[in-house]
Amino acid sequence: MTTTDADGSRAAHPRFAEALRELGLEELTAGIRRFPDATRTAAEAAAAIGCELSQICKSLIFAADGVPVLVLMDGASRVDVELVRRELGVEKVTRAKADVVRETTGYAIGGVPPFGHRTKTRVLADRSLLDHDVVWAAAGDPHAVFPIAPGDLIAHAGATLVDVRERTP
Image (cartoon, rainbow, N blue to C red):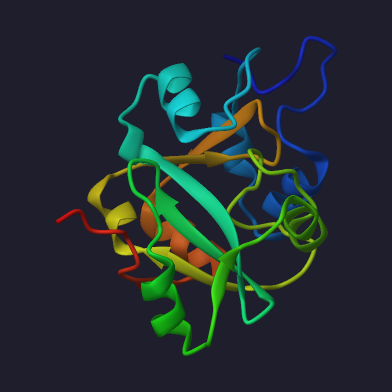
């Protein structure tokens, strides 16, 4: 895969490409892969890339007492909202609606990258992401993903490392 579309445009969303430049991470653009079919879900992304489901980094927006918070979670796991609630010390945590996701991040659900958002939000990253040398995250578009070392992802997202993965009994 190339990092450009057939018309020569970048594979990443322009806002995300700008965020990479601002963070001094232009080299990540070389790893961006664009797919003709959407990679909106972790399963679609893993199938397209040919990696383990847990190597996908989901960027999920929740509302913590009405305030948006980003949770970075491996693609094979679900977020335990009760653990997020406890971690943040808030009364209620719910999944944010699509309009809140777009307003907060500047991206549509299925293409939300782990950083480069319209507004600054608190970021939690589940420790499970550290189980891999490389994870894949959305590049601001439902058709584009990029690889990054989990430690770098957590650092550039300004995330707090937490354990908020739903446990199966």
